[in-house]
Length: 128
Image 1 (cartoon, one colour):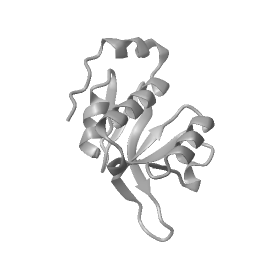
Image 2 (tube, one colour; image 1 turned 180 degrees about the horizontal axis):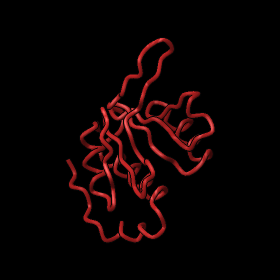
Image 3 (cartoon, helix red, strand yellow; image 1 turned 60 degrees about the vertical axis):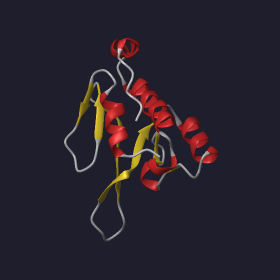
Image 4 (cartoon, helix red, strand yellow; image 1 turned 45 degrees about the horizontal axis):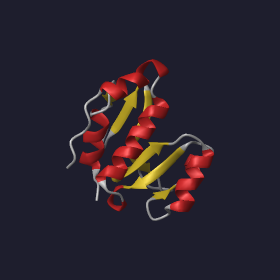
């Protein structure tokens, strides 16, 4: 079972990552977000930052649908994310190794081409 601290540790182990000050977690590479806390919105209520759910950048709509349909216990979306290459991940439903794969893939898709080669030179995150 993964948690917000695992997200933080894995994201910060990647090269050129910037953590944005937030109520939860929010990580960027090259000025582009790749994983952050889910800002849950319910009509008539203030937004709640959910650190038990990560929003992850995915490659495209096909990958998004594959995750949503293939692993509905882990991944979901909301109408606010329709048409965007983003999925929400229930952290309690994934182990740290799978989380590392997802966070790294999101980083690769958002990092500028000039930085992607630096990933191979970065030390691996320590397993928990």
